[in-house]
Amino acid sequence: MIPNFRVGMGYDVHRLVADRALWLGGILIPHTHGLLGHSDADVLIHAICDALLGAANMRDIGTHFPDTDAAFAGIDSKVLLQRTVDLIAQRGWRVGNVDCTVCAERPKLNPHIGNMQQTLAPLMNVEVDGVSIKATTTERLGFTGREEGISAYATALIFRENETFH
Image (cartoon, rainbow, N blue to C red; front, side):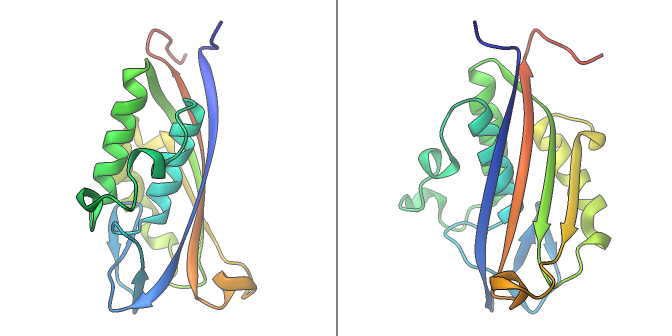
């Protein structure tokens, strides 16, 4: 028997580079550098996609949206998240909530978290309260501390469509 609830975990990292826009949580954040990737390189959304796909036992974002496919070059990661939600829905799953952590030295992300939540919630068909986003630094340690990249972690709860939360 398949349980009515499942949990998945996702992680993503991208390099910071000059002359690129910084997209995090589906919003454009003013900064001197942006994230390098085949798509818009939104590490937060990519981590959420991996968490959702993992919970549904559907592998990872690269399986469904490979960086070798020109169709995904420069794609808005919000589109990938919507498609991920559709993919898990085809197997009868809905998003319950996500809990995320973004690791970055700069820019300061706390002022943008509310906007990220407002942007991501409708893409996953959840209330804003179902999208938890936290920001932290690595106290200047490692690639994040040297401002070479940004990483994100996400945990997602999914449930069968015939189940409801009380």
